[in-house]
Length: 272
Image (tube, rainbow, N blue to C red):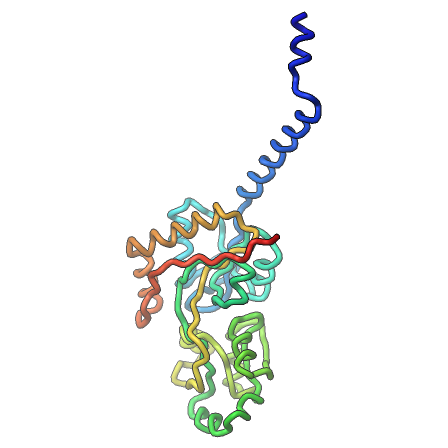
């Protein structure tokens, strides 16, 4: 009688199946949340630079300070920006830094920052700006150098400069400008002195033609990165800005710039 009672009290098979499926879903969701964050950056000195074994730069030190707060020990990989940006859009659990904030990008990824402020500026070789500006609207027909997949190339197009020469890195583009392959170069003002130094020139060898926009630079997380992961990084960024370590890093690398002290998190729209 006891045996029959125990059998009768067991949940129906359909209920047990639903319970099993729910447990499996929770298990796989936990695996997804625990998946290692792939951390990528680019050669864009002094913000970030290096190779497969060592990354350096202002934003690299900021990310490492955040990692120290969170206990994250994942290696930072230096890759071409176009490759990192593709991974950011196509994969989950990817962090790419730094990424310029724009309305288009806010719809595609999570942005946490800013970690730096720059200006999107059109440059030419020293002594050439006045001649170019005298061309009026015809200047927009000239070839402009920019590095591939960058917000600088996107901004040039928005400003009516469609004749673009694209390359894999800003150093290649800067070399092409100085070799007179073209007369215009669009880049972030904060990195121009370092880029020119790396190729044997100085900031005195170029001059601005026009400033397009101010640019906030962020940590960018792929759209499918768990909210819990992003919250940890956001809280840690807020902590290093509050305790003074962020400003110390910023002034070390960019002594003439004012560090951005607010923390903003934008998220892409929820998919239906």
